[in-house]
Amino acid sequence: MLEVIFLGTGGIMPNKERNVPAIALKYKSEIILWDIGEGTLRQFNIAKLSPMKIDKIFITHFHGDHYLGLMSFIQTMSLWNRERPLHIYGPKYTFEFVQNYLKSGFFRAGFEIHVHELGEARLKFGEYEIWSFKVKHGVPALGYVFKEKDKRGSFDIEKIRKLGLIPGSWMKKLEKEGKVEIDGRIIHLEDVTGKPKKGVKVVYTGDTEPCERVKLFSENADLLIHEATYIDKADRNESYHSTVSEACEIAKKAKVKLLALFHRAPRYTYEEYCTRAREVCNYKFIIPRDFDVIKVGEGYELSSIR
Ligand SMILES: [Zn+2]
Ligand SMILES: [Zn+2]
Image 1 (cartoon, helix red, strand yellow):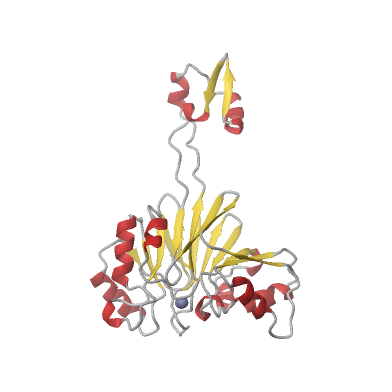
Image 2: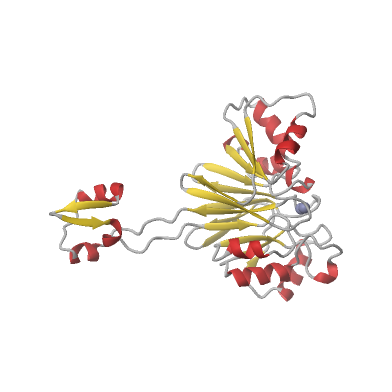
C-alpha cells in the first residue's frame, strides 16, 4: 500500500487555492518527495508530516515552482539537528544548482547532502525501485516511477495437497530459500503458491509536452500523475506543457488504471478546470486538490487531510 499525498497541485506560481508541485509518497515508515516547490514546508506542517522522515527528494527539473522549497527544508532539518544524510536526485545540472543554492544565506547544512544526477535510471531501494525517464520540457527534465516489487502469491493448500504434501515447517524453509527437498523431491516456491501479486506502480511526469517516454514508462500503471497545465490547445501559448486532452490520450494508450490531472495553470479556478476537463477527457481521471490523498493498493481509497 502506497499513500500518495498531494501537497501542491498547481503549476507556475502559488495562489490562494493551491500551492506549487510537491507530492509525498508514504511507503511503510518512509516519506519520499517528488518535487519541492516554494511553500512545501508549510504544506508539510498543515498535513502533519515530518520533514525529518524524508531521506530522498526527487526533483523533476529546475524551474522555480518545482524546487524553491528545498532551502527551507534543509534549514529546518539543520535547526532540528538532523544527523542522517539527505539524498537529492534530479536531472543534469542538479549538482551545480544545489551547490549554488546552498551557498546563499548565513547558514550551513549540519548534515551530509548527497546529490545524484540522473539520466534514465533504475534505482533499487529494498522493497521498491524508483525509475527516472527523460521528458520534453525545453530544459533537462525527468519523470519518475515508483515501482513496488512484485510479491509472491500466498501458499495454495490445493496445490500442496495435490503434490501429496502436508503443510508444515518445510514451508518456512521454502519461503526463505526458494526451494526445498522433501523425500528426494525438489519443491519450488511456485509449485505450491498462487499467482504473484503485482507491486504498485505510480508515475509522475513533472512538466512535459506530450511525450512517448511517458507512455512507455506508464504502461499499466496504477496511477499516472500527468501534468495538464492547460485544458485545450486554444488556451496554450507555448509548447512545453500538456493539455488535459493530451494527458488523457497518453493515459488511454498506456492503459493506466487511473489518471490524475496535475499542474493546472493559475488562470483556472478548480471548478472551471473540473467542468471543462470533463468535457474533453473521457478517461477515468481525478483532479486532486492540495492535501488530497490516494491510497494505492489492490484498489484505491481517496481521502483528504485538509
Ligand atoms: Zn511547473
Ligand atoms: Zn517547468
